[in-house]
Length: 338
Image 1 (cartoon, rainbow, N blue to C red):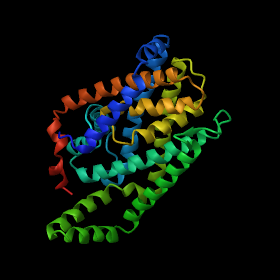
Image 2 (image 1 turned 60 degrees about the horizontal axis):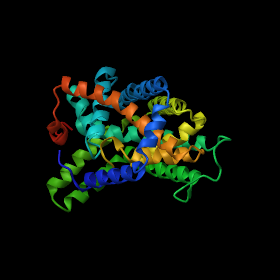
Image 3 (image 1 turned 180 degrees about the horizontal axis):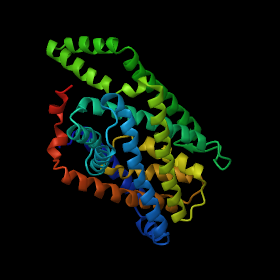
Image 4 (image 1 turned 90 degrees about the horizontal axis):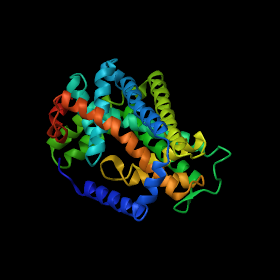
């Protein structure tokens, strides 16, 4: 898998953040973690890992218009593999790996459609994360004057909510007037060559098929419920991590901090989002008056404890299914089935 400039930039950003955050503070962070409750960390890691079966169940609903109710086992395997790849390879290669794994396990799910379904997956993630983040700002213990880089925390959450509304409008335009969108893509490609126009049309058809869940209010509601369960579970894992360090922040703080982290890891970073995760987690916790060393210690501790289980599980499935890194780098053959 080749590293392009975006991957190199992400790794450089992560390295710079880690150096800035940990420089001169490693001993203090180690001391904070040594004083924490190991069993609460184990509970936090177990709950954090539980979100991935929930993602698989949600993905089942998203793919229903395309291939019916796919059994959960291949969806769970693909989800675990995708997260493992995100943790060890740059440039969010796990998204490609996840789509490739399910398209190999289920020949009735073309790669382009599987990949498009992940756009819906991420859209619902964004909507629910921002809603929970906004809900967190309503808690009486939320600091009303909180700012991040000089911008009000509530303003940041609202801005991302408006951005997601725009993305949702674009996806629904693809669903409601596909011919117009596909025609535009084809005409744009024709400016280069007729072959390119046909290629863009075929890719667009595959992408549109992965958005079928948006046509069904019942299925969209089901996806929303599973997404809510997913992110409330993730917030519970954050909160258990707070308890492991004796942080007395409310559950609403976990909802808010996970939103800050989710927004932060959207920028280019190293595999596993190291550096960016710790920086955004610490920034969120400091708003609640948590000392800098404890906030950073939580970010380091939670990241490591939650990183290990899903990476091991995903690696196990990756090897059992006889997949190779080269498969992820070139999933194009599956696209021909679109």
